[in-house]
Length: 350
Image (cartoon, rainbow, N blue to C red):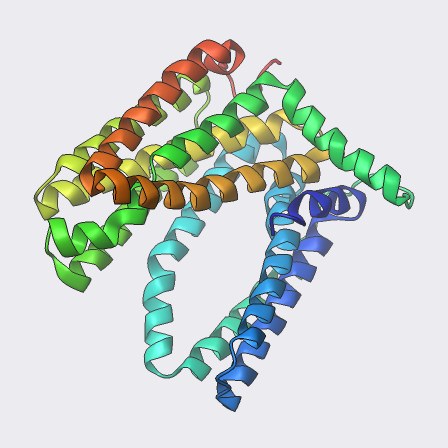
């Protein structure tokens, strides 16, 4: 996924976000079929599983930038903030319901779980195929050198726009340092001592907070002082992370995690709106690819960073340090990106 996300963004701009998203979903459905076949065959070899997972990464590299770039082609600019919030709501509902449905499917057998995955991907593919979209201007076939140059254009656009670069990089470093959720199993087992059921509640709490905020913002999208709201959300995220780290009671920990999820959703919606409205159609796929690469890096590397620091300093100090680090990042970014700090309307001037 890391290797192919940026080239997929260029392909998205040259072809169509919808077509590329459909291709990614089709490939993921085939991967689910491959897992089903391997499960039915009861193979004990690991290399076929890793091979299919590698193809899953290719499919995600195709689909995720295209899915993010597609939304502005489906709705007019003035409705984009609500559309982003509604999409975020749907995503958070899936985050809450998905693991529960997955566990139920797996309780009926691994074969059932893989079959359900395949059907879900195909349903998403069919739904996507029925959508209309605003068309991209056709781009002639390009040589490999020209395609590499087009990928570089997307990176250069992000670098040249203070609002886009500031919003994307703020999310990268805030999530990189504030990855408390990666350590939830340790909190459930050793600190709060609440067992598997408590762990499930802890995992769901951020999604609950995020879903509530996303539903509210779908009705009342952010319009004024969005830069201030973005930085305020990151500050609240850092404070809530420290509060979670120091909590010794399940109720307090759940409340802190709900706030973490809610503040993160404010940040996600504001950042997504600013990035989408600042980006012209011609580079939308490539900018979405850079954004997805940053998001993926922050989530995965943030979990790794949390584990490494926890192994050296202990779990609670690691999460406290991460929360404080997030507050420091917010302060530094407010000084480094004044255009982002001053962003007023969702139609920013850059």
